Length: 95
Image (cartoon, rainbow, N blue to C red; front, top):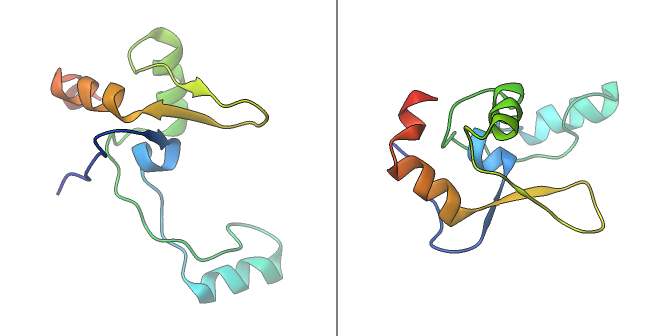
């Protein structure tokens, strides 16, 4: 199953690369240990299944779409239309 991409808007990196889910029990354990995700979160399937380092190297080289840095924070987003165009061009198959 391919995750759906919104018609308009932006995607953050976990929405593109996927993320593991964290149950309430796991989050509680992480808070006690002081490591890992401290809040429950749903699992997100990967749209483009590559590692974070591969993604950033691909963005730098031009293989993957360039993101947009949001002002006032350390957050980068990608236009949903850019990700969709990348996949429709068949480039997502070579990831």
